[in-house]
Length: 582
Image (tube, rainbow, N blue to C red; front, side):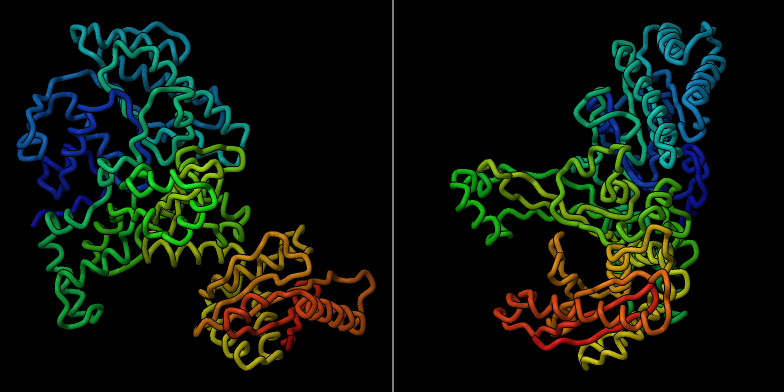
């Protein structure tokens, strides 16, 4: 049984020490014999650096390291040697664009010194041009390979300082533009990172890098597939299975298939396996319909135009640590979210908790803009969301367009992401939300206003309130976040909630709780009397809105049981609830 490569190892270290290596050379062969300049996006700790290191060894002619691997046994690749420029942007100084330029120049000069090349002093782009040309000359006109790791690190490190991030982005895009001018001297360019914010847009505005991130033929280039789990981890699976059964973490008669299902549930579910196939036969037939018929057909025949992504990839960091520790735990999440994502979530945790996961365009994941960085894009590239499915819908011009839906990939990510957001909002009761959920369900079904009031009051008592939170919108989002944290299913409401219901909670047996909330700020001259009057007035307004608006008409017509509740909040902490008969 081969030992696991637990700490960050180079490709040569893993092979030479005979540690376990999951053979990715079929993907590598496809990559280096395909497009000349490529970009790959994958989350942190998914094996990007190891992949890049293996490609480096391939191009420096280390055929001995690939003995027995796919590219050596199943292809005619002859391992020609090429000079390699390898850069890791995570080691660059990023506080200012000048420091970034100096860092890039410093690393290029180191490569020149290693190759005994004298490079004229100058700006970093001039040094790059000189290095590429001199390397090619030194090796008899052989073309140069350029490999860039963590390409977006200088931008991501400054995501909280937008001007610095934009300045570093401009430097990096200039770097790749310079590479494009050196095309005749280059054999292969491969750039990897969590996002493409450093390399420009996917439409080639700054460079000609081909984005392979969502190409089906590269879906498993990083991470472990289910087949690879069977092929490489059989012995580890058996030893771990025995240990888990002995500890009681798995039932006594569990087998490797049972363990594998748990591994997929905990650490699998990542999908980068397909691009939309809009022009299938049925979609073409739909395009021939008029717009009204097309809408009807698409909405009522979802299965006909629905493509489920089939390429499932497991988180390699969690899998390796699981087999080492022989216990289920949150290995990847506990290793720490990237700092830029932490800043984004902490700036608006309610928005990042209550995500709209459906109906996104492909640009949601292929374009990353620093201004108003979208939550879906940030979470997808960070590894916290994955593609769930692609649907074909009318685009308004009697044509079909792909729409992407997202989901949390697995148990490890789903539960920890939600807890992470809640911990940014609730200082004392995030871990107690499941207890409150049972109390609320009982209060709703019994129409017990006192129990509902006290429960919501307890929830708000553990919440944090920014200085600008004295409005009904923040309290609405806070209550919604708490309900989501308690795993309640909520119906999406129209953006304009004036006069109507604020949210609808879906209980078991399809019972709907329709809620109207009213918030009253603290009065300048406050006493107990005035507080109670404001609370009562807020509750009365909530009840009136429920009675006068047809909030539940559609529910009644569908035969669903509806419970209506008015909820009044005074000065962030005092809550009064009342159930309304309409």
